[in-house]
Length: 383
Image 1 (cartoon, rainbow, N blue to C red):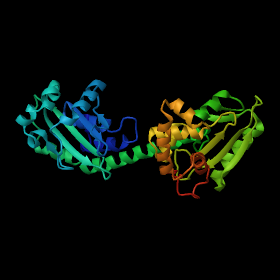
Image 2 (image 1 turned 90 degrees about the horizontal axis):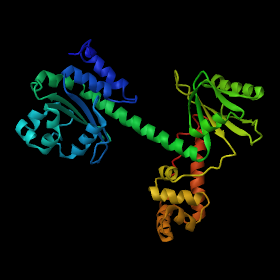
Image 3 (image 1 turned 60 degrees about the horizontal axis):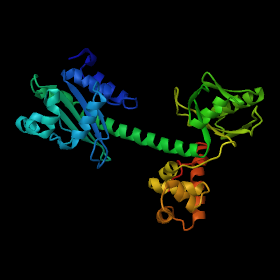
Image 4 (image 1 turned 120 degrees about the horizontal axis):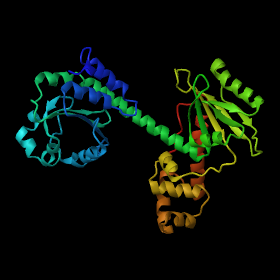
C-alpha cells in the first residue's frame, strides 16, 4: 500500500473523495489514491447523464486527452457494463476472461494498454445520473482478490453520496451561469464582496467599468472612488447592512469624464456566509451601455429552442420579421412558424405581448437579485 493511503487505508482516500468534489478536478485525487492502493495501471470514473448514449465525463488521472477521447469512442461496445448497482465485481467474474478478450472493446482498445483484470462499480444517482468506477490492473499482475473487492466496497455508500452532491453542484453552477448571462444581457454589472469588503467576483460588464477607472476602480482587491464623499458614502453603505440588517441601498456616482452617472444597488447576502464567501452584492447600471438581449439568454430563461431564442431576442431588440429573417439567414415563413411555437410556449398571442413578456421576464431576474434576502423564495421562473 502506498504511503498516500496511510492511517487506516480508507480515511485518506475518503477525504480526497469529498474534498475534490467542488474543485477543478473532481474525482481525480480519489482515483489516484485508489490506483496507488491497488498498484493498478489506471483508475477511471465515467459519468453519464440520464438517457445519454455517450459519457458526459471520463476522469482518468495522468492519462492524456487523446486516450480519453478514444475511451469515449469505444464506450458503446464495452461488455463490462450493467453491473449489479452498488456491487463490486471484476470483469473476470462478470464477463469471463475468454469472452472479454474476444470482444472488440478488448481487442481494439484495452489490449493496447496491456490491461488484465478490471474491478468495477456501477452507481446510479436518484435522478438517474450514472457513474462507473473501473480499476484496471496490468496483464502481468494477478486478478483482484476477495479482500480487494471488500476494500473497494467500503467506498460504495460514500461514492453514492458524492455522486448526488456532485450532480447538485453541477445543477447549481448551471443555474448561476444562466442568471449571470441574463443579467449581463441587461447591461448590469455585478460585483460580490466578502466580509472585509474585498472583491470576490465580478462579471464582464463590471470589469469593464472598473478598467475604465472613471470614478470607480479596483485598487488591489478593493473598490475605490475618486470622490472622497462617494467613497465615504460607499463604505458606510456596505457596513450598515451587516450591522443592522438594513435592506437594499442605492447610490449614484458622478463620472469624472462627464458621462452619465453610474447607479449602484447594494444588497446584503445571507449572514450564514462564512470565510471568503460573498456577503454583499453590488449591481452597477451604466446608462452608456445599450441592453441587447441574446438568443442564448432568452432561450435559457424561457425554455425555448436555440432558434426560438434567437428570434425572440431579435424581435425584443426592436427588429421586424424581415430583419430577423435576414440576420438569421432563414425565410420569413420560417420565422413565422417558429413564432407560433414561441407564442404557445410563452402564452401570448401578439408580437407586442411577446416583446413585453421577454423584457419584463429578463428584468425580473435583476429585480429579484436586488431584493433584500428573505422577501422572496427565489428567482422568478420566466417560463
